[in-house]
Length: 209
Image (cartoon, rainbow, N blue to C red; front, side):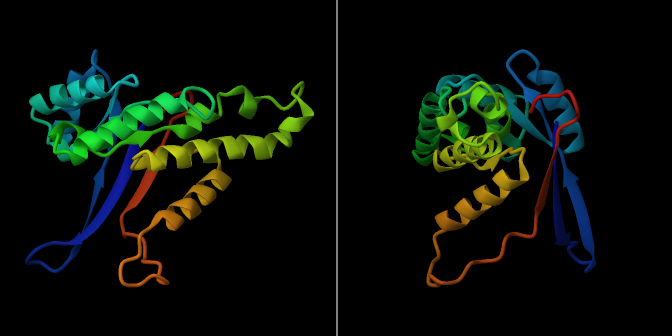
């Protein structure tokens, strides 16, 4: 899995645009992080540090990665989570505590957080099964998209910076929800333009996020 983050800027002193591409390499876990971190450092990329749903484990992996010389601003935390109805409450609590620790000055919890609500939501029974379920569950497609959307929005409100989604309609709804969360300073009726950076998530066939 990789994230292409294209950043355009003016080259100092030469007045020309230069495009850089950063990849998010992963998945870094406690058993394999050394090889991935070394590769990322050698090529100037970022790493995805994934741990089970636990504040201390997330912090510890960040420390291990950082101790190898990886700049803290190139570590993306992946605390993992469950989908709506499948442990999301505990995941929400862990992410919330990570954010509170960061706000209190803990440098090892201040990295951006990335979660995969698309993967988690689409493996649930509610999203996968269209037959043999109670009629009150409603339309299968609508239900599945709602499951992914609600999971993603919930995790964003708990502090997620990056959410990996699967259905285009879910992406549209989540973007709309994020727009409602924006705090408009001195211009309450104005929506500010999005940053110029672009992010593309690529998941090769057969790989999990």
